[in-house]
Amino acid sequence: MPIIKSAVKRMRQTAKRKARNQSVKRELRTEVKDFSAAIAKKDTKKAAEALKKVQSNLDKAVKKNILKKNTAARKLSQLTAQAKAIGVKPASGTKKAAPKAAAKKTPTKKPVAKKAPAKKPAAKKAPAKKPATKK
Image 1: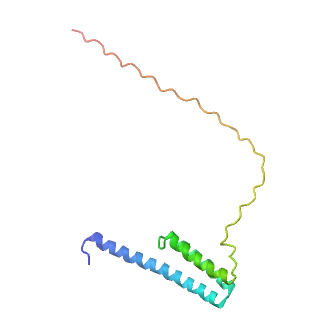
Image 2: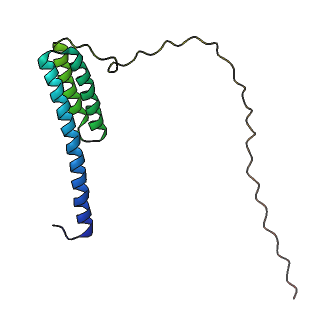
Image 3: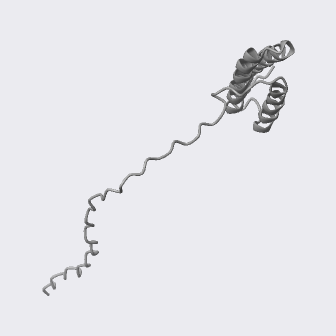
């Protein structure tokens, strides 16, 4: 057991973070198991929903720095390959939406504000002369 005050605090913080990280990983594992169960039953609808949840949890884990970005990408890629093998179509939320076609607009001219003339630096004044002292 540490004796130094800062080390004791560091232990408390580490324990809290470890518990938080473990709960996120546990939740992710249960989602993956649900997905695998849906794949085993070849239930495309449940598999699609489960894949969406897994993707969401993977993204959250990456955002919280619990998983590395490439690890999450690799896991998602593997799960997506399994889903495609049984014929799951990607959910509408997972695909990136196509950019909307921009309607052609006639460019309107905005009034242009006139720039103020640049200020000239103030000229330095000559130092005031001291009156001559009388002798």
